[in-house]
Length: 400
Ligand code: OVV
Image (cartoon, rainbow, N blue to C red; front, side, top):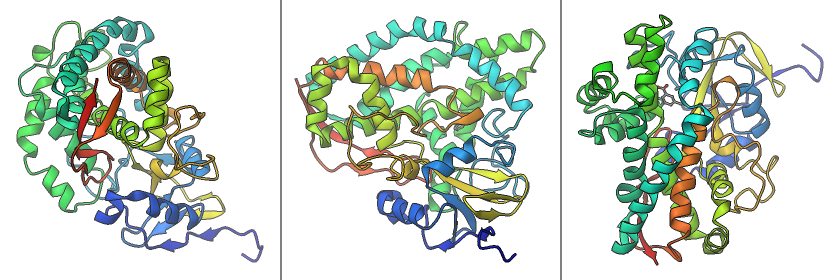
């Protein structure tokens, strides 16, 4: 082609989203990703990528060109068999996706969430009160993991014994979206035992009668799905619903510990809890990256992407793209967060986002009405992870 507007191949850049350096402090790498071009190719992995808000959104909103059925990790299911039977929502395309998502979506209706509000509130208050009494806590174990392991696992209806397996399973699922590196191997070390517990928890016989899990089985009873399909759909709650919110709670505490004036603003008006959570989602998105696969050759931002190519979407980079946000690296609960992609978007946009919001609202309200100051008290350590951003340990002091 001779036209000056002819599409170009993506510039190749030397950013490795699975390197230790990137994982522990992604923000300078995000800038390189965004500034490398609308779409780039990552030298280390030979995949396309975008960290620009405009193009992340464009990909999310065009599922016909950018499909999920070949997996949303770096591995292409058409070339490499997936490590587990694929998710029936995350890793599918219409029309299967549409049918399956509707089954999950019904369980998470506004009415269903309203009926959980009281329980979530009581549990958040009880937990936060006991932690304030202790003063110094390890926020990851004591709060960030403890809260969803209680309220979300109860809501799904899984057995009480063995719930720690859900944390291990989340680590498998989300590290499993990355390449087969050391993080992948470490997460999968105990894969069989963990997967067995999770799969058993998803069976009809082991679910409580009133939870989301049994509501999925109601679809089997009308003949839409088989029991095995219902177990696989129930597995999606357990895959996507624990580590994500756990990391969100930890990240929220860290944001407020580092920005005490923002904490005082929330204390003054706890009704800002929901807005504050959206800013946490923008500023420190727990779910940092996922992939799509092109179904045909396409052009994005003037760059040609061949068919059957993986493209990485950096939600974290898009959520701090200065082309979209003013002062993107400042944490400000008063800003408009409209358009953040922390929950993804388009037809695959997080189906559980309203329950995530409910959990975080309750935790932030319980804290804001009881804690005058959140202070880092020790050495917080980020968890090295292929996909999630959050803490391995976060020692804090909660002052009454
Ligand atoms: C959004 C998400 C993340 C991880 C797993 C799943 C979904 C699933 O459906 O299994």
